[in-house]
Length: 99
Image (cartoon, rainbow, N blue to C red; front, side, top):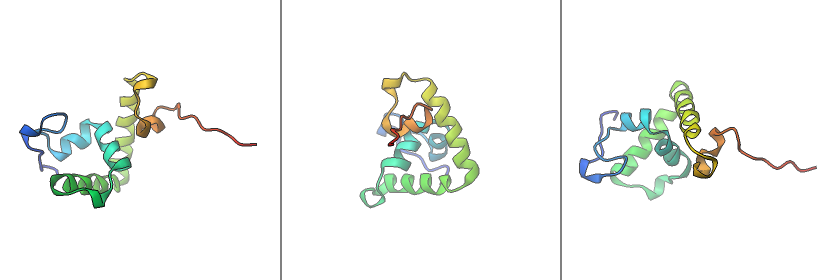
């Protein structure tokens, strides 16, 4: 499935890219899929991509590489540009402690 592509005319960040290219170069997309997509609400190429991402991230090495890419990605953003699902990679994920 590494070579499966989104159609070129799809446009945006996904158009014309292989699943592997997205996995290796677009940590924001990968994290969005992993954190927010619901399998039952996907179909067609989106279901295939969802399954690809979930399968790949089960591999500890792939997961570790993704986390590294995600941490590097959030460094390029200001605090208010970091999507909520990426905040865990910023090191600024605020947690409230209860006494």
